Length: 156
Image (cartoon, rainbow, N blue to C red):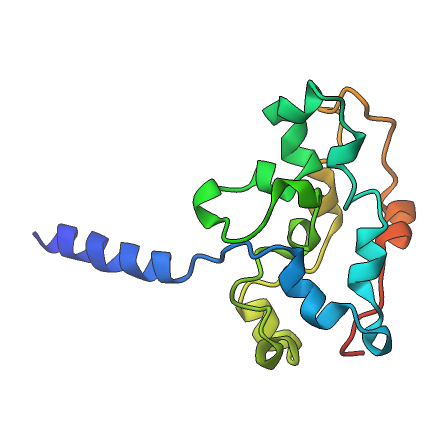
């Protein structure tokens, strides 16, 4: 009985900590202003945002392709709130699900943002997709690639 109670209470705490995917439109609310770096506009014009468009019709139905060409394809569907497959590789592929950190009151603090699920992209985050599993893999140099996707950080 005690084990069941502990499991029940523990699972409730874990569920409360689940971070959900909200989609790039939530990020756009603050990250599209020129004064803050216009990160959304940079992303919208990028290969990441248009990754689904780079797939053939057949590939666009293949879960092995979708898992890297759309954030939706690589996450638990139960954690998707408003994220769409058409967004391609969205902000949340690199920065983690934003349901708890996207509010401006949280985003003003790096410490609070990290505590609420913000991920700072690392080589390992990129290598989850940029690897030899892809039939289109042409090699990957993290140091060069990160320069292509780096964008201004609004709080700095």
